[in-house]
Amino acid sequence: MKTEKSNSEKKQTMIPKNHYMKSSVTTTLVLWLSCISLSSSLAASTICRNSLYLAALISLVDLFVKKTKIKLNPAIIIIITALLLSISMYLPTIIYSSVKFHDIDLNYRETSKRIFLGVIIGFYLISHRDRISSRGWISSYFWILLGFVYTVILALKLATPHQRLEINTVATMTAYIFAVLSLSAIYISLKLRGWIRHLSVIIIVFSSCYVLLLTQTRSVFLTYPILLLAILIKEKFFNKHTSIIFLMILSFSALVFPLKFHAIFDRVSQSIVEYKEYQNNNDSTSLGSRLSMWKAGFFTNNISILGESADHRDVLVREYIHQYENGNNEALRVIKYHYHNDLLEAGTLRGVFGFIILLTFYIVTIIASRKFTGNYNMAILLVAPTWIYGSTDSVLIDHRFVTILILLLPFYLCSEKLKNQEKTEHSNNQN
Image (cartoon, rainbow, N blue to C red; front, side, top):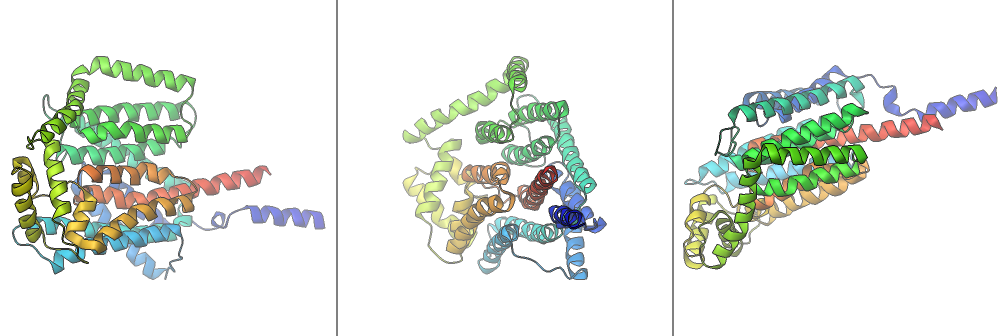
């Protein structure tokens, strides 16, 4: 009897706590709405916005109804850092409001608001992640894959010869958002088993590469394959058969779409030409304008705690470009939007406080997600592309990119935590 009792107790301890918790329809609904919002951020702005607001509202109400106590853990620390990022982006637009460049203030107010809404959702999902059933997670995966498929179809419909693909925004931002969405779809497909796993990943990779080719965005074309290979190798996707299929698809694509490959390779090789022209004082190129803006933003940056207005920043930078950058026309044309670097944007507009908060957000998210999930998947799938694309452009000024960023945070954190718990439970049951 004692032996049977001890065995029973042992089995009892092997079963995780969340095994006994009832699934919550409300929590599952919030997860679904957040997945619908992030997957439609590029293709359907109205659905994206409404789903985000509704998910945040339900989360906030349910947090109060259930009197949820926020327990501090690495995932919650990430969300707290995101909250600080939202505050740091919003405050300067009020303290140092601009007149001439008021659109910049409005853009950052919108992105900071969406981060704040995502923070509410993040607090809620992480605190109630044990109340999401397996069916709830499977449905959430379906919503993201559906959004990906819809975006691909829309991209093919909007594609026109000799023009870069734009979906509700400029071609570069289209590429950034789609790359992050594509990586999330691949992440979900890697959860499948058997031949369907390999087939779905190959289809997603093939369609993603084609859409990214249509955008002709150099930074994404050069970095997306690296991020893709990193996650596929880490998840042990490649074997003899999949490697051969990948090579065959790459060769087939190069033969079927030679003009698309030729266009992007021309843009990549043009970067070298543009850099040489910049050295020869011909600054009015895409790369030359970025270099001029970066130098101007760095050398004219007034070190302050909370930054300065976009109006005052613009006056200083234009003076510098006229004096030291040969009056770079291309830089003067595009500098009214942003400085094509998120850290530089944070330093010039939001001061020391904003710069430190953004840098902390990147670092904390990598370290804390590793501690919470036990791997670097979120660093590869989300933090790395955000940092890389934010180094040659400004992605945090766009509410579409910010929406998919802030909603994928709790999605990856909770999904990875669930995967680790299932592995532990499976291992314990075998023992």
